[in-house]
Amino acid sequence: MADEAAGFLVARGALGCAIAQSFRPGVKPPKVVSLEAFFTRLTESQLAELLSAMRSAGMLAGSARHPRTSTIVDPGWATLWMKRFKPLRIGRRFLIVPPWSSERGPAHGNRIVLIVKPARAFGTGHHATTAGVLWDLEQLFAGRRFRSALDVGTGSGILAIAMKLLGAQTVSAIDSDPEALENARENAKLNQLEAGVEFSSAPLNAMRRRYDLIVANILAPTLIEMAPALTRLLARDGRLILSGILAREAAEVLRSYQPALRCVSIGRDHGWATMVLAR
Image (cartoon, rainbow, N blue to C red; front, side, top):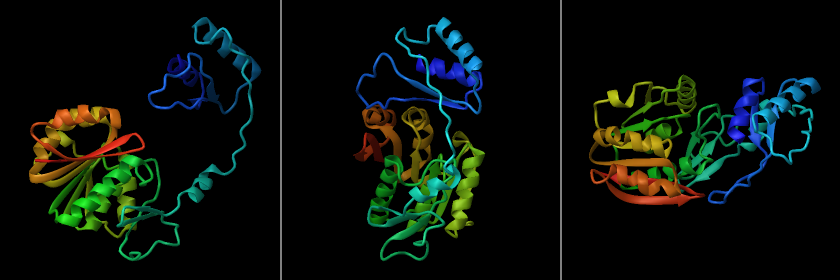
C-alpha cells in the first residue's frame, strides 16, 4: 500500500514521500513499512483528517502508531551538494570533474578531463551504469576509430561528449526531455564542444542513417522496446553499448537483440549490467 498511500498524500498537498526503510535487491520487504511525507505546512487538524481517511481506506496497519511530526531546517541544500561532487577517475582515461573543480583544465597525464555540471538530467559518472559505458568506450576506442556515433537518451550529455573526446568524427545525441538537452548543450560548451556534438529531440524511429557506434543507457524495458530501431541503425561491423540494465534483466535484454546482433561482452557492477553488442 506504500505507493497508494504516497499517491494519496501527494494528491493532498505532500511535496513527496519516501519509505523510511532501505531494501536490498532480492530480499523480501517487511509487511509493514514506515512512510515519510513532506509538507510545506501541516496542522494537527489536517494531520488528523489525513489519518482518518487513510485508516478508512485500509492504508494503515493495525499496529500503526500516531505519526511524529518534525520541522526540517534547510542547511543550504542548494550549495551543499556541490561539496560532495569530487573529481572522479574512471578507467585509465577519464577524469570527471564539476565546473568549479580546481582540476578543471588540460588533460592530467593520459587522462581526458570531462567537465560535467550536475543538473536534473541523469549522468555524472558516479552511477555504475554510466561508469560501465565509459569503461567500455575506453576499451573500444583503444582498438579502432569510429566515424559516427549516436547517444540515445543522452541526459547530461556525458556519454556523447566522451565519445567526441575519444575521437569519434561525428557525434549525435537525442533525448525527449528539453531540460536534459539544455543541460547536455551546457556541458558540451563547458568542454568546448559546442559544435562537436549535435543534440536534438528527434524520435529514434524517425532516424535513418546508420552509425558505427551507438550507446543507450536507459532502462531494460525501454531497451527491449528499442531493439528493432537500434539494430536497424547500427552499421555493418558497428558496436552497440547498452546499459541501465539490472543484472537479473541482462539475459532478457540480450535475447531481444539476438540473433541480429552478437554479444561481445557483459560487465556487471553493483547489481547493474553493461553489454557490448556487434553486428
